[in-house]
Length: 218
Image 1 (cartoon, rainbow, N blue to C red):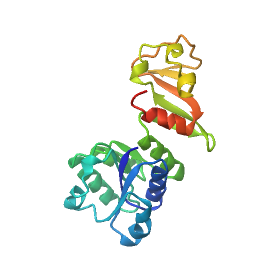
Image 2: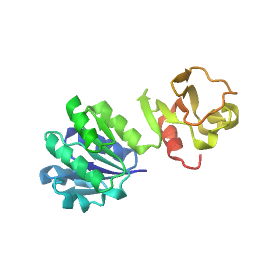
Image 3: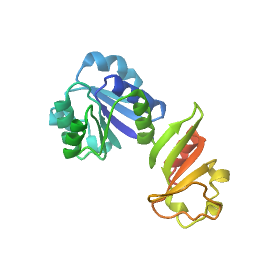
Image 4: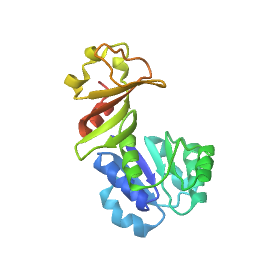
């Protein structure tokens, strides 16, 4: 479970927030428009009506306490830019901001955004999954039950072979490929040794993979 501060509850913000809540996260939503916030408030952990252009208003949200802050303001890039900068100045751990053009993307990175995304429904769902999980780089949802994920190899597995880690039997993970830097091993053998910074592409039950990525004791 992650804690997420979601600023801007337009269509994309609502799609993202809804998915984050379904994944079991704590989500505080923020928008300056009470007509937007009031109907949505019961669905979320917390809801605040405030204008985040004011640094004092943002400071009151206790920004450093959130695992991620997402700025999804739809129609005011200047506000998005300023809020992104304010969040970083206040100690935000990770800031994701929405851009509509490449120029906007460049400016958002310059003021401190850790990640910049372009809006659409699929991206909202993918972003929610990545914010929810630990060390998920990408994923493809095959149906309501199964997905393919690109995830980091757990530290506990470093130096072990696939046979020793036994991911299929212990964690219900089917390893499709292993990425070692720029090299891809399309058919890793049971004797393949996991190395530092390896990534693996795995197939399996979506909920079980998400549980695996969030289990610090794995």
